[in-house]
Image (cartoon, rainbow, N blue to C red):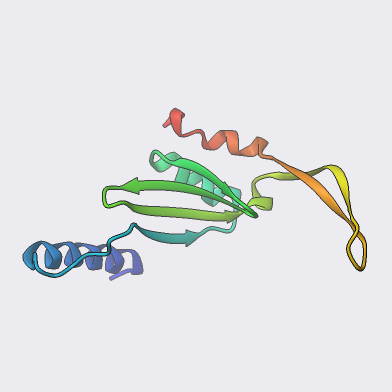
Length: 119
C-alpha cells in the first residue's frame, strides 16, 4: 500500500472510530494538514486538481482546501519559488548598530495560473 493509500485509510479509520465512539472527544479547534512541494509545476498540478483558496504568509505561499470541522489541507511552497521579490524602498533603522531594511513587495505573476475560479 502506498503512503497516500495508507494516509487515506488512516483518515477513514479515524472517522469511523470517532463516529462509533460518541463519548470520545474531538479537538475543540481546527486541524491543519501540511504538505510541501518544491516546484511551480508540482503546485500547478495540485491547483488544477481541485478548488483552492490562495494564502500568502510571510515567506510561504499555500493552496488551502477547507473541510468541515474546520479541517484544512495546505499545499505549501516557498514564496520565492512562485513569486518575484521586488524591493520597493528602504527604511533606515537607527538601532545599534544602525542598518537599512529593505521594503519589499511580492509580485506573484506566475500564480495567476493557479486561479481557483478557473477550475
